[in-house]
Image (cartoon, rainbow, N blue to C red; front, side, top):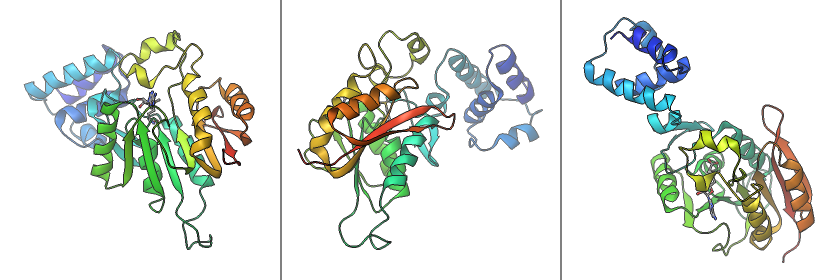
Length: 284
Ligand SMILES: C[S@@+](CC[C@H](N)C(=O)[O-])C[C@H]1O[C@@H](n2cnc3c(N)ncnc32)[C@H](O)[C@@H]1O
């Protein structure tokens, strides 16, 4: 089968988007994901039978809902190439809003405007593939970055990403912040926040349930982190949380009621409030 025909079949018969069909074909051919121009230039080449078989299987799985990143094994996040598979959530572009927010609040590195003191410290709670922690460490190598997840599988993926990217992040296993004894200037988290029983879960069946749902209203993890964070924040430290498109008001109310100040939200690129956070001024 020619390349042109293989792509057309994946789109028309299986309903795949053209970009997905092209990226999967590059993967089946063992070519880099940025090589789409090669496909166009070689659209009358004939696929060898092994590649054609591999491509059929990949497109069938994509049509059945497997995330593209699980099939190609890579996801770009904040300019980093992360390796991902079914042990972790496929990182979403929305989460870059949380990274942007944390970076905008971080004081400049020592020696660049801030007198004396120490390096800023951050912890990513529920790190999954390590996306947030690694993006922060890459953007701010001077910061001390830690990450926690309850899932040993997720930590294996995150540590492998850190090692491959040469980024020093301290990983630990634990239930939210329970086993964390130090204090941090920033606690950031994209916790699970989908309500159990939400009809959207049907489409997300390929990703770990632990990464998706959190109690009847989706807010159990956020409540736990808001409650645990004060004793792990330096005075004046920030807690920044990603949440669902309709949860900003509820999360701001939880933060305010718990005693945080400067409570506010941030919008994603679509103008939807997708992150909320606040500062903790007192030392409990
Ligand atoms: C929505 S995913 C976020 C993954 C990653 N931070 C990202 O943005 O792509 C939530 C993560 O929280 C982790 N998690 C779930 N329950 C947890 C708990 N009780 N303590 C720590 N981490 C937990 C899951 O394993 C998952 O990796």
